[in-house]
Every structure is written in structure tokens, then in C-alpha cells.
Figure 1: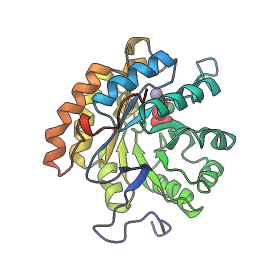
Figure 2: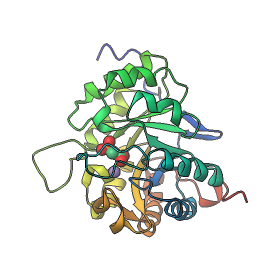
Figure 3: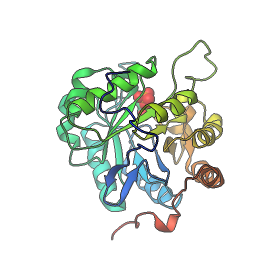
Length: 285
Ligand code: PEP
Ligand code: MN
């Protein structure tokens, strides 16, 4: 991987901590756990999620507003209305937010309202989008393409870095294989490999990797054990009624329990999970 000029690790202790918001980083000793719905659906939905997850605690909120759906007839996200909701929740709860950018023209719109821009699996090799994200001053969460090799994944990150933005967080979210029992196959070997090849933080998304809520917690625990820097997990106040990805979505109670169960594991691998008391304060007024 001789062309991984910027993202490659140059020595054993070379690892980058990416600043997400004032006093919040990804890639340090503390794990970064992101929770939230597949899609932003309404203000009450996001209020309930933010209030509950602040106490879980999570360090970031996710929520799609521009959605890459397999069918053009499926819900495509709330679009600009969703952006208003995301922005209000971000201000009210002081939690960093992450949302997907599907096209270059959405970057400018998202810039003032998102703390991290997500490049979805289907866009991992949208090179024009990667180049454009290289020119902005905003961390990018780059998800692995559904059939991308580790080299292709690392080189996609290099595209962003080579255009000026090295605030990149990698995310393993499962790859296609022959077995349809799970939605994808979570490649934990890739997580260990990426931590050895690059200095970038690596998150794991056990929701899209498995497609089944009952498999999310065990794989989240495995991800922490293998050295992931954090997790991104879909959860919802009424998971069965999620407009998208209901089958893989956790309840807020299950999410809270999962985070608690990760504490001893995190400690065993020299990591930590912030206490709820240390999480950003709740609604300002
Ligand atoms: C998502 O995070 O909602 C999503 C669509 O993920 P992926 O791009 O990994 O399929
Ligand atoms: Mn989803």
C-alpha cells in the first residue's frame, strides 16, 4: 500500500485522535459511542433519543436525513426538514451529531449543522465526493464499501486526505458474502488490520453488519475486544416502528444496557467509557 502516503501508520505508537467538538475526540483512550436512528423521523423521536442516550451515555448522536435506499420508492429521508431537527437537537443537548452526505451539493448545507459528515458504504468510491470532502474543515466518517477490499478502503481514505482533510474516521460495517442469514459479515479482522496499517481511528457498526438486533450486542462487545475506537449503533424509542432498518434497531433500553456491559471489556483492553455524569449537560433551558 505504498500510495497510502498520508493515512499509513509510520511507527507503532502512531495513532490520531480526531477532534469532533470542543473537548470531544475520537481515537483516544476513551471509546466513542454513537447512537441514534437509521433515519430522523420527527422532533419528538429525536428528543426522546437524545434525552435517554445522554444518560446511557453516548458521545454522539446519529440520524440520516438524506438516505441511500435500495428502492427509489422507499422513504428517502426527511431532507431539509430533518436537518432543522438535527440542528435543534444538537444545540439543545450539546451532543455532537453525525449524518450522511450523499452528494457534493449537500456538503455546504450540512457544514453548519453536523459535527461529522458520514460517507455511506455505497459512496465509498465516489471519488468526486471524496475529493470534495478533502477540501472541507470537518471530520469525515468513511464507511467501508459493501464489497470493498481493505486496500480499496484505505485508498478511499487517502483520497480525502490527499485533498487536504486528514480528519478521517474509518468504519467497518460488514461486507457482502454468500450467507444471507446476516445482512453482511462483520470483518473484525479488518478492524485489527486497519489499526495496524493506518493511524486513523476505526469504528464498528454492528447494526448494518448483522441486520438483526439480537446480534448487535455480542458483535459490539467483540469490536471493543478487537480494538475498535468506538461504535455506531442504530436505536429508536419504538424500534419495530423505525421507518428504515427496523429489524436491526435496538430499543433505547437495550442500547443503555449494552453500553453498561461494555465497561469491563473496555477496561480489559485499556480503554474506558465516560460516565454519564461526564457527558455533556442536558437541555440548556
Ligand atoms: C447508515 O448508516 O444508515 C447506512 C446507510 O449505512 P451503510 O452506508 O453502512 O449501509
Ligand atoms: Mn440504517
